[in-house]
Image 1 (cartoon, rainbow, N blue to C red):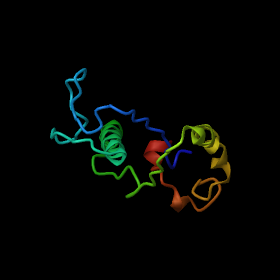
Image 2 (cartoon, rainbow, N blue to C red):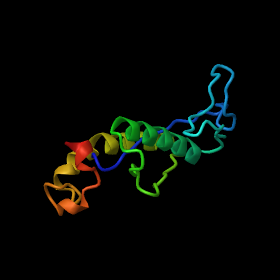
Image 3 (tube, rainbow, N blue to C red):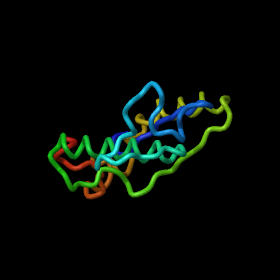
Image 4 (cartoon, rainbow, N blue to C red):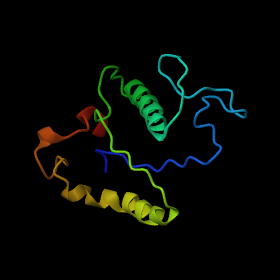
Length: 121
């Protein structure tokens, strides 16, 4: 759906999740203020991703102070591989529900639209 985002991040054992610079990558994780970001958890991965996408969207749409994300997110850790197929299916099929979503301006109150008109249209 255009009003939210789902992703599965796969962190393998032995990956440099606690090491901001791996041996095969000279670049530290993304930071908008050129400071080093230490990745120590899955939540840190999401935070770095959100910062990078916010910066990109604000530059792309020339909206430097526009909020891009909801103030929080719901992290769901997947502990068993057998749960992945159902999660992938949910993510793949989730956009089909947009036509019935109350935040869809075509369905509900247009003032509830999360996507600014300058971006969506």
